[in-house]
Image 1 (cartoon, rainbow, N blue to C red):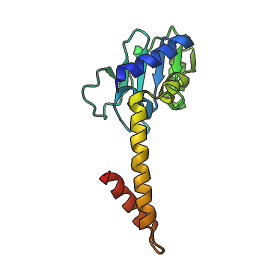
Image 2: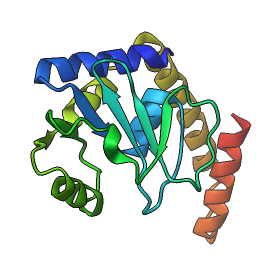
Image 3: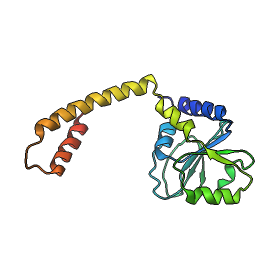
Image 4: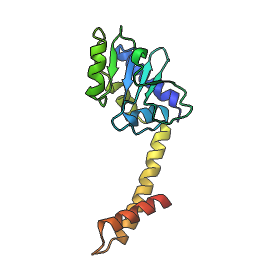
Length: 170
């Protein structure tokens, strides 16, 4: 799949909503849009999408990612956000980051922006549909094998290990 096509679709949703910038913090949405996967724990991790195409990835210096294709800045370097225009915020950005940002930028309006990404993630393209079909076939095979494997007296761990191994085989 083409990452730029996904970001383009989100940018169109942002335009429909009148947003010139959107802060995406859901790691799964960031992976959906960029292919980059980070498990941030409680640290700030966000992708700032801008209508002008100058996107920024906010990373903690502890994260290792290479060749993201985005401008990368540390989490303390929030001046990249346009404080004169409305900022869309996604549903997962914690208040511990949002409230200090709002306090530092009292003129900036923040609004709900999750629907811009969520709507794009919900609408699958042909390649994603094919991948889902293949995953469903694999799931059916593994569940059939698991049903045959399970015997009275087995532990849940034994069954889980068997299922994990079967998924790896597929």
